Length: 468
Image (cartoon, rainbow, N blue to C red; front, side, top):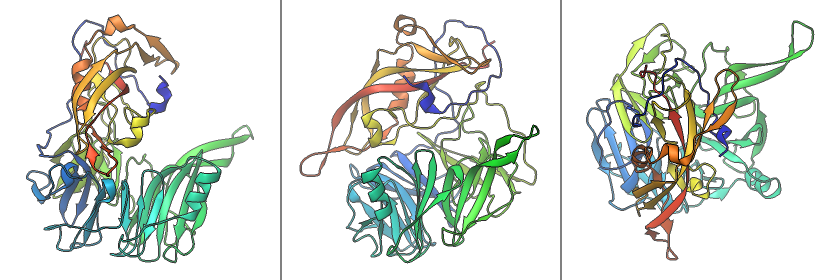
């Protein structure tokens, strides 16, 4: 198991003793009960919107206290993304080419044919011009999705050079569209200013940057390396600083003053500063919006949206809590579990099934007997993917020895054997996998079918700090 793939950052906070007891699943706040599994969450016109399995779209006008189902089709496709052009005009997209549109503020949704495959992310600049990410590349349309065309700069690179990762797609209007791409260690922006007739490729300076569209401009937030710095000893130095930059055309960029805090996941509303605080660096900070931390281990891998004085966060479950405004940035709290963990990827990240995962967060379990503050392990998992993408009949077995992090030197070491773990991880891992959403398999006629899947599941273990 290659533990580095998780990109985990662990901070030791306390030391605890080892006593034999059962493991548990972390508590992440009051879960909103829903009749479907949500995949995407956005805010529009003072309301929060979610979309997911069974072709479902629901909205809340009171910050997540109550929800109204606006569209659904039991056993239908999985809606993966949802967006709005204005208060009346919105769109949603998902598996097997499904596109839905609303012209009345979401009261009714109508399918629109033309796309094929799965849409992972989509953005429209107007009702005709849009860009989407698919399983393998990005495509654009100028006729409302009736036809989709590939982007030459992406397709030619894939054929000649190899793999590339689509990060974000943004359409600003009928002429300006862009896609951000990760190629090896480089961040690339491919954009058009003439509605797709010509596409230009530029290299972006940020690492781990997010591209969003706001107020008629592209905005990129992330970090930048500057190697043109002279150290105290006269040698060249390399520093990293936070960056917010914006552009109207994708080519000429203007940097904002460097912010003093790290920026986590960003959307059109703003950015998470850490688990429990968000703000809008585009419009200006303060104010800061404070909410109860979602994760007991400080992770910010969830999607989020805010409205009506509330914050709703979405990972495997939807959690909505109160949010208050502050003119001063609060202190970053220590996570209740005793370790801070940043997780990138999904539980099948290195498995072929991982490419079909629409929502497969890496499971995290709490174990008072774990020999270090945190670590990881893996086990064989079998489950059935239903026709609507939900997961059922989960069976976990053959959990292996794990890895721990030495907090003094940051090195990994292997611990434990199969017999030591027994089956104590089975129950929490089963609960976690049951919340996954996976693209269903289709038969020769293009119809979704149920299928049993199996593979090696990677998971994280945290030793709770409460155990003294």
